[in-house]
Image 1: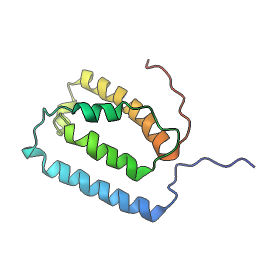
Image 2: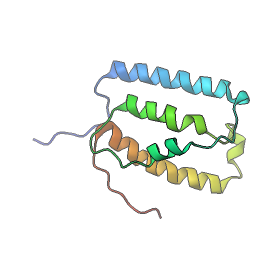
Image 3: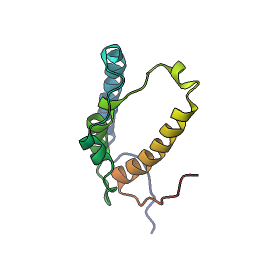
Image 4: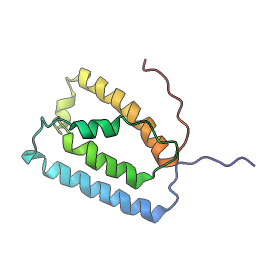
Length: 121
């Protein structure tokens, strides 16, 4: 019998708690945006951690959120206003490429599923 692959969490209560934590984190981030330096760059250590090879086994949603909080969120360097996105097609392209890479990393980190890499088009 073939086991059906699913992206459903193994424990819905833990996922609910993590979702609430993520939402609180997002609202805090938005609220504190006025006092943040928008041009902070990632540290070499944070960049190195993001460039490590993808894990062969899943690491779980909490680990992915922890990595985001440590290595991505502190170095957010653009305006949070939705109006900022209108004329920045070059930025959207870079973010789109980064999101494609992050999507592969997250899928593999959470469930340990194999990822078929395709070159960017």
